[in-house]
Length: 162
Image (cartoon, rainbow, N blue to C red; front, side):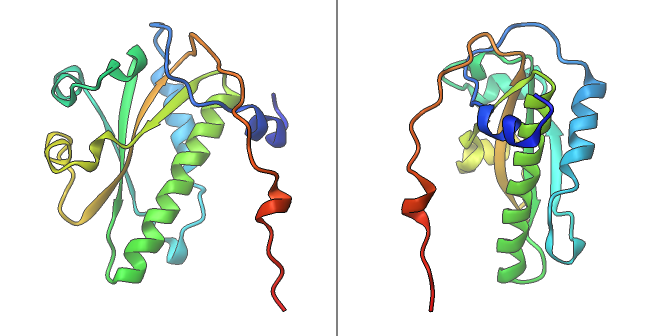
């Protein structure tokens, strides 16, 4: 899968992982690629937190993140205005998607969880008051790769403006 369209179309959300370690240098290379995400005014608003076992246990996720060997949290800095806060969150979502695609191209799956949205979990993850938590990512080699879920044809989502 070295064609970007193949990677995009074949990427799946993984919910059950093998216990094999994912080399840190690979994860760092995917993070390096992810930073090429579009971001207005080059704010580079993302921050990445590697979640250790103690913090992970406190999160108490119902499936333990599918037993993924690696867990990271990704935050987005607010910026100087309400508009910049929104722009930064969108840019950070692009960062996360870039990471997902780079990992998938490398044979590694990702589960993007919103578990950190609650005040309690924001505190556990030490998310600063001036940042949004965009997601907690479980990262590992897939134990199960699900079939694709049906999607609405893009034709039904296109609108033409005069």
